[in-house]
Amino acid sequence: MTTNRTSAPLRTPAAERSRRLRRRSVFAALAAAVALAVSACATSSPEASARPTAVALPDTPVGEKAQWVLDAVNSDAETTEAEVEANVGAEMLEQVPAGQLVTVFAQMGDAKPWIAAEVSEETNGLLVLLHSDAAELQMSISIDEQQLINGLLFQEPPADRTPAASWQELEKNVGSLDADTSMTVTRVEVVAGADAAGQADAAGSGERIVDIAGDATKPLGSVFKLYVLGAVADAVAAGTLSWDDTLIISDDTRSLPSGELQDLPSGTLVTVRDAATKMIQISDNTATDLLIDRVGREAVEAQLAIMGHHDPSLNTPFPKTREFFQLGWSADFADAQASWADSSVDERRAVLAGMPGGVLDVASLDLSKTAWQKGIDWFANPADLVAAHLALQQKAATPAGEPVRGILSANPGLQFDEEVFPYVAFKGGSAPGVLAGSWLLERADGERFVITLQASSLDPADVTDTALVFGNVTDAATLLADD
Image (cartoon, rainbow, N blue to C red):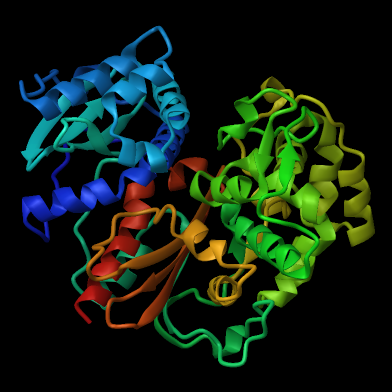
């Protein structure tokens, strides 16, 4: 990761950007967890000789809060919820609970010590480049009239890249990426006549503005969770599930990060609504497996066809995240790894049925290697993802599916101009050698677009610079804003 970075020019006045920063506070926890996890997967850390000199934070109210955050992530003692509540405003805490920020600070603490390497001031806010030997993060922080934090966003610093000024330049930039990458930008409408369950027709999804390897079927990582959300919404519609039903965390349902539910004790109850929100907003794997267990694997598999997937057999049987980790990286399943791609559905189901419960042995998993080339992942092409987003918006238009729209927009994945795109639905995913993202953007004039990007490589290092890869999505949104 490079240490010399330039900021992209702001498209709005500082005061307006500060307002938008406050509205983005809900995304703080996810951005921090994802950025830190990606940085930890990088093949190299910044060289000692390139370490920047620490700069002083300003002696202002917002500077004091930024210093509190810096002290919290560097502390050997875990930040308490009471400390968070004393420094963060009530409006933000309604969206990002104190316990979630405690988790984020603890995750960042794994890479300490952090220093402030660059600082730029805004109205009621700061942009701070945080640096450690393991990672770099850009922290955006703002405060309210009571001088309490009302916006906190951690993300990877902007990549050293030149934004595309045209669709042709965008295609060239995508083609120059090290990983094999597909990208599509599609102007869409919700399919007329789609049924109440959200049946979508990929063929009717709309006009493709950008089509880079648009027919390629590629691994998804956690983007597969769109289908789990669809199954949950349909179960609620059928009356077999309620958003307020509770799920129980146990060692048999506990998966590996990303997420936070895996850190809660066995016996902890979580509602279906909360699990679904965490599954999408922070890509919580334990929440995902809890939901799959409740609705049933077959119900999720059925969503592949319901939501317009061109070949459901690619994801049948539909692995849970626990199973994915064991199948892809446990030496105990080496034979299954080698034969998975050529195995029948019944043979695959037998492998999954034979996987042990209990606490996963993280130390036994070699996550430095890729598994997607063996057929171990979830797979779709861009048209499938367009159809999935349209299907979920259809479900969201029903009384039973009403929470779906808010769940999908809880984390936009990237920063978008909210005046141009007031609604953004997003789900991304990653695994060794895999990086994928899908966005449904609603423009202020009523136009809708779906952007998909799927990158894969046998070298995991080719997809670790998410800012470089997903910068193409930001460019596409800028071009759509000017369209």
